[in-house]
Image 1 (cartoon, rainbow, N blue to C red):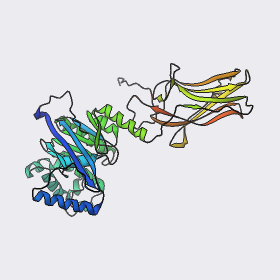
Image 2 (tube, helix red, strand yellow):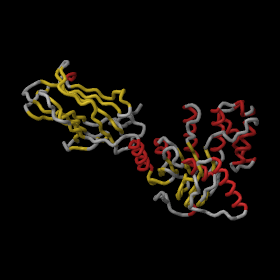
Image 3 (spheres, rainbow, N blue to C red):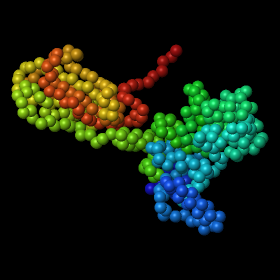
Length: 423
């Protein structure tokens, strides 16, 4: 699947395009021995000028990326999302030049820096100072340019007196902070970020975000990979969703992240029917449940609920008596975590009194808004008479909740508003 991504608000001139990925594909082999053999053949073919692009997969190979095309404009950001194994890091490595594509090509205008495996390239026997000069030289800075920013790199990384100690004496956090500082002080035109913002403590992470915002205002473009949709939503204007090496969707970041979030929810839940029909009781039960279902605010039957919207959970019952006082109870848990109770309501505890009518009647629990976040839930419902007499019970009524808004990492929907007040 080939898709070209542009921000429609940016004039489409060559001077504005900082990154262009054109029909990039990459294949790997799962068998290690065969992978080495293919690699030697490819290297030999390149040395002899015989290797050509091919759509053919050799035995044991698979496409890690297939026909990816996109463009990124100067000063703007793209967020890349997808499950593990979807090809995100492979694409970043190809863009950074660490890996060569089997098909297609990448053009970058200006200096590129990558926040990938921070500090992994440092020589442990050399000092922090020596590693800074080596690392930033590799990233394209001259000695004079490095000297100009050296003190700022040390100050930002909070290394200070340890800068002349061997890197092997550094903690993993110190190496990551120094690697982060080296990358962002190269003054890159394009910054590649692969899950690299969880560096150090909270105070240092805040400083990282502030510095990233500063270099973005100076015109640096970001290409960001993260499993956290909220980071991408805060940082990027446009998004790409990868699945098994192909682009599922691209465009405005809020729409792409919503599609990604919905797919995650659906992949971890079963298909649920939002109505449950029960067989008629063969005994002489005075009151029993015949069905369970959902209604919306307009009293229409619905297949699922929406976070933040009115919901009615309904029990249809049949009674052979008139005027019997009854109560209803409902207990809701997450479908995948049935030991944790999210909601437990009983009419008798709320001093609500209800009486049966002879024949069929409907018991409704009305929620002015459904506070449950997107996902699958199971409810246990009962009709009883206080304190111990249970007429009938449904052990497991499963239903789904969806969202019309971005609700990543939210357990429930909370109506809210914001305002500021003078001090």
